[in-house]
Image (cartoon, rainbow, N blue to C red; front, top):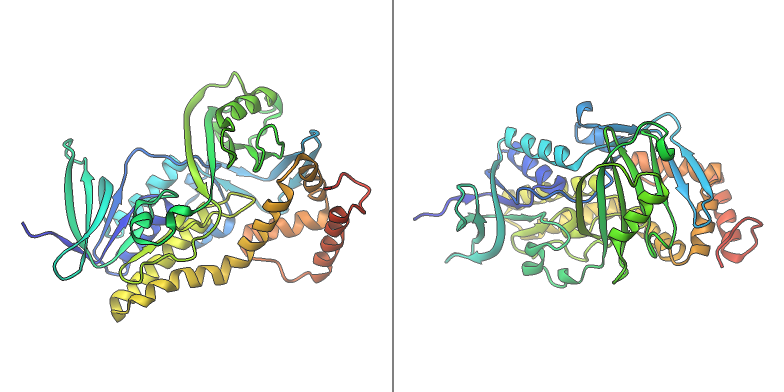
Length: 401
């Protein structure tokens, strides 16, 4: 039998893969979106206004609008960070991801349910994507030819492992959350328009725990890279102390989350990575939806250029463009995580520092617009001086050692 040939096969139907498939289809390319059905990634579900604008996200997908964040220190010190003149959109990943996939199909992409196995090569060197096809109720191996492959199959990407050197060495935080039925307003201190973030070593020795509103539900979760640390136990403890222990548990999810972009996203031939597969989850914050979708768009652009020019080096443009726009932010957040999350004393100082109006204003501006704020050098200098005060022990408030 003659195998069907596609301009691109996109492996993985999360935000990165769905955007890549949709963009390629709208560019007139024959695209197969290969999605492993039924998987929902553990995720707080926060999306910034820039994502909503850039990717045309309709209001009905926003299950909540968070207008404030509440940070809780190891000593239970609370710092409130209101969003001045805006909001953070909250989405449920099951509905959000499915809508993105459906939009890709509406744009011309073909969608099939199956699990990626491997990439083979036919006689002329063209990639042959092999996968388990479960669409007809019978599991069997299917093969299709692809002029290009986009690996958007998550932090433990099999596409990356098989085609990109050292991809299997990507450092990860492991995340676990429970989607619960949201309590009534004010019950246990819960508010449907506020994200709560706990910086406490007992809940996470090297990351943080969270309670994010999702309308009728809420995400209660934690992340940690510490081997042997009980994520389920931490979530149970968090629900207990926050008054959410008796809320109905709707579903639970866990998965690794990468916190460092890979050094290379393409194989120099016909494969390019996007989303978690390429490591684009922001350090310190763990934010990944926006960066995954940007990565998917850049991967699609790189594939189109490769198909038009016939030059495989075009695929390297995806990483180059991403790091040009976001590399400095990732570098700064990586330093923050490395320093501030190492002990409860440092976490205490970090939460205290976030009580500063300059820190809050510039943090929200950078988050909402996904770029460093350069327009207020005086504020940056004030933050630098205060930060150095904490680091050197000159601050009279709780500080890092």
